[in-house]
Structures are given as C-alpha cells and as structure tokens.
Image (cartoon, rainbow, N blue to C red):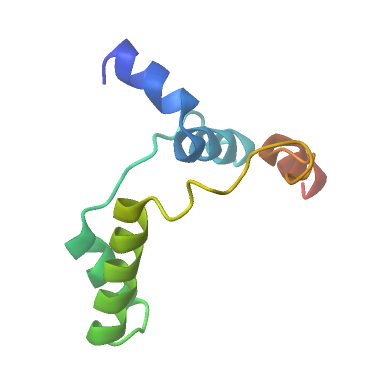
Amino acid sequence: MGSGCWSALRTSASGAATLALGRRLGLGEVPYVQFPPADVTGALAGAGLSQDAAAAMVELQIGLNARGSFVDVRRAADVVGPTRLERFLEAVA
C-alpha cells in the first residue's frame, strides 16, 4: 500500500477507528479492509443468519451508502458527544 493510500486511510472514519482499535489491542497498525458484498453476505450467513436475511442486510447497507442517507447528519459540537474512540478505548482497558 503506497504512502498516499495510507494517508487517505488515516483520514477516513473507518480507517481511523480500525487503526485505533488495532493499537489498543496491541496489534499495531491494522489496516481497514472493505469486504465485497458477497463476502459480507457469506460471513453473516456463517454467523447464523439465513441466506435471505444476510442478503437483505447487505442490500440495505448498499442502498443506504449509495443514496447518501446519512449526509444530513450533522457533525457538530452540539450534536456529537465529546468522547473520541481513543478516550473510550483507554476507559475500557
């Protein structure tokens, strides 16, 4: 993974959360890996969901992501709690 990719990964919410969790668990810099939809469906089915339920959950998430359903959620001090993931991980240690 090139340094440009690492830099972009560090700025994404999922990437940042993955890195913080990896560090806290003593695993170092664990990369965020996005799974293809078919693999997610298989993993959910493997965890006990029916194939239909797993496929429906993946379809729902893809739809939410594609439509930008969360774009209106404000990320401002008046609506977001002050606890950052790093502080939470320190508190539960």
